Length: 281
Image (cartoon, rainbow, N blue to C red; front, side, top):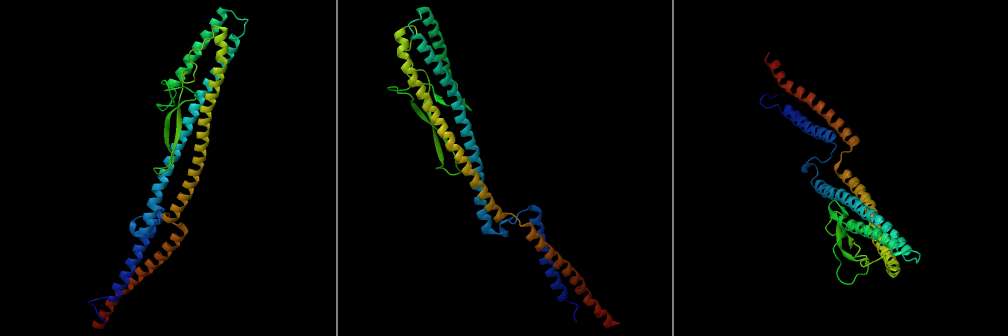
């Protein structure tokens, strides 16, 4: 029997400390919901998880970008709905003015409405925008005009990497871009010549709307794909990073029992040197 070094007490205390440390880690994982709270918990898992989190963040923003793109195409198509309506009205006026039963005064009234509709078409081309981004080019198109006339592109970022972009064509939009300048409803000949031009303009606007529609369909499918990818990536990241609560609670219960047993044994070990006193009596 010795009293200088209580080896049994030291051993019990060491095991008690180990059990306490494990129990603290169990409590941390249970309270935070994360299996990995620091690099020491799983260095490789933390690296993979952080890369996945970066991708998930990028995917979330890409979905917001795609939704903005869908809204933009819908805005452009909505503006052209009115242009289509006005072109239909202009063709009706041209056909009406081309009828030989109308005199010059009546044709002058029809031409006055034409001028008002032209002003509105030009206004739509100049002012239609999405968050201050012009949807059309209202400048005079260069060269020979064959409606529709493309101007440039609006580039959308539709993924979490640099190369995942999509271009939406921006078209010139004005009465000049639709090759309607010089139109005149005040004469029978002018009205007759306008009918075919208006038919071409109506088809050109339909082509632009088709571009917006195709872009919208593309973006909707892109959003669906991003959503599925985000879901699968989040699930994979969760399996790496998140705590399995049932498993961790089982482990905590085990370590708690070991801790209580070690505490009890430490108390017993610390009482052993007291037996020496019995020898001195």
